[in-house]
Length: 497
Image (cartoon, rainbow, N blue to C red; front, side):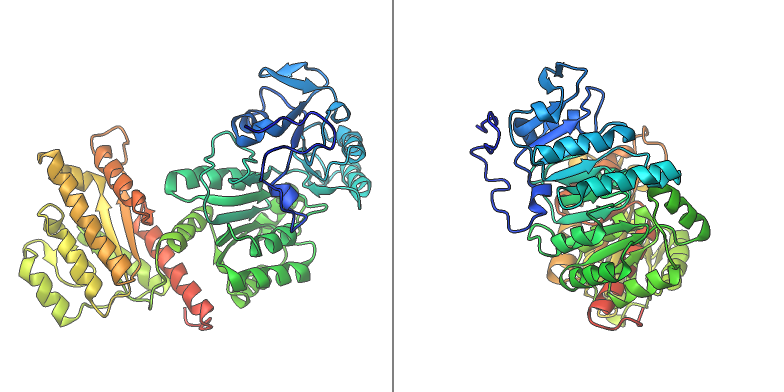
């Protein structure tokens, strides 16, 4: 049982979280105690979220207007908290922040996360001055995250800024200049089997900035893959140095906001960032072997691919589908990306002809063969295509409506057995042949229809075995492209794709 802090200077006991301080930023991710200044029962980001997490035993609520919040004692000021506080979340109106910050400093708080907005991002001179004031107050006395940001999530310690996230530990970290981006990636990740070690939203970055967190994550044993959303840099040389060090050790997926004139203007009003030249950013990412993505969805898809797929040995892709139309359109898409959709070897074609019905089937690549999706031979086709020496990656196209039409009259245990056999075939290709295999699991357009049952079954079976699942062939193909790009950059063939 964790013991409450009852005396100033006494640390939480017996807790081993944060007990080892090899890095000063450990206090950010593993604080011994936390205070929310401006706590409220209507605050779902911090008050309600942290009272649900393992942080709750070392959490102090501060609000001069309340005696209790959600049946937890509330202090009028940080000055009244009878224990030492490592980490303070400041959620008060911007004009009050300087006074609150001075009180935090007087109490020996090590890190203040300023959630409050209304500073330099407004472009208003007096608010720019206010931001400069808190920067001067903090200099050399306390570390700051923000202002204008969501702060920190750490699955291991329980620190969070959302009451809707899982604390199941994972290998992905995110450093984001945007707060909403951080909240959304955590939420989407929970539905797509992406689990996080740490997430940071750093906002206006008047003290701790993107490079500080990148440097920390480079040395963090809990983090294996890093995602980055950035709008601009205050010190380009330092950012490059940090990114270079990190990318040499771990895959980095970067989304740069403000790559157009209009986006640059939006970035300035969002966090006060100066976006910089798009060409310079693209060249930087390429030089440092960082996977540059252009949308939020592409970032999520690429993280899935890195998590659950081996790196492909080449750019040759096969698509197994039930639709001639999809096979044509998606072949065009692969070609536009820079992927190849080569013909099967004669041996593969011969093997397929042995058990795939001729009617309604094309034995070329893509393999357009709707009869095999309800005849039980699809798993064998997956194995045969996976063995083809011309094929480096596979996309298996499953559609809930098609499965429903073809399996709705069959006994439920027959469909389960079909999925089991299909999973075993996919495991063979991915785990033994070491080829990326993406599952395109298309949901029905109307989620209330009967086909949703088949979509959810496919999703459950393949997510449990840690597959990369996508809602369209387009997204799966782009993820394969990004894996190929990363492989070529990693092995210094940076101009190949």
